Length: 92
Image (cartoon, rainbow, N blue to C red; front, side, top):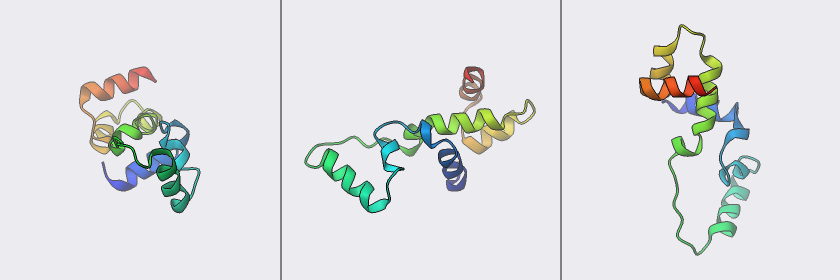
């Protein structure tokens, strides 16, 4: 998935970003860095991939775009397998 597609999916569904990352979208870059330091400074932190953090945003965008005829297009656009995409569309 290209950067623009991911950014569009996230920004149009920012309410679905998992915690604690959702709070970072409500702040500018400096405040976001400070929030990370204040919350996690001195500790060992696992940082998930963008796809993990933004999964619900991407899935919501894919469901919204699905028109019954563009299944293959969505597979390519969002980088899911057929099985994953069928589960996403069925769960919506």
